[in-house]
Length: 405
Image (cartoon, rainbow, N blue to C red):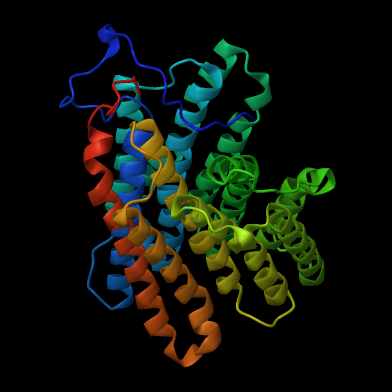
């Protein structure tokens, strides 16, 4: 899978340049889905805190079935799925040199995702389940069309990954409607595992490259055995947990995954990175993966609550990687410098602080659990709200350098 920084030397032909003030939201996949996904993260967390506070909020079938299930679903199948779709629609264009969904097609996909958010919140079961379950297969079909046209075989694997993500979403709705909440939550855990695998695979390619580009002469090491093992051991450990394998076996697999990711970080010398914040935040986000596996092993052996491991993966690793990548790639693909500004720094700090509060707070002072939940939720919501405020204009307008996209 080839991933590169957005090029900055190409100047689009005059006929392809858009007027600076024109509407560009549906030019390329990252635009609507980064903006919508970040807004979803902020709004869903505020709503979740209101529910925890006892606010009398009317909701649809999922909220009535289980507020916790709604929260988990929207953070994974709403927020994370939007970012994954936006990232892949953008990356596949870079990998193939062919346009992915844009214009009316991209607008239809974005409208489907938005309608799903509304129905999952307020709608009856069947329409909500059908509309929400259609989003990821539709995105996979659009990706497959471009990959097949380009003959880009090395990246065909993305399509079954997205389809599996979508199948888990459909299964979540099925089990929720069938009043089997335990199995519905297992679908959330498995889907979170898929996203962690994507973070580890994509991070394993871009983090060393970005580090070398940003810090000339910085030496990293990559061991072939570690690189071959990292994806399968990650998936095995997380699926073992999701599907209820014997806790002792899950603990062993989680320990192996922890050691594998820790070795990878040691080879990258992440502890020695003193580079720009837009780079350092990627290393910090990745560090949540071995931490999550350490907590998962401890959870399997009965030492810490399972939810802390899950939030290390979802809030720390996935949330951290998302805020790192949606700032970096949005800057690159809108023709702006790859330098974090004040808004970016605040977003990084708030998302990481919220993740740390959610995971470490209950460990340090469990009697203050509600305080940690509220503090973490407010930090996370604030971090993604700042992103929306700072990036709305660049995402709605054409690239500053006149290139298409």
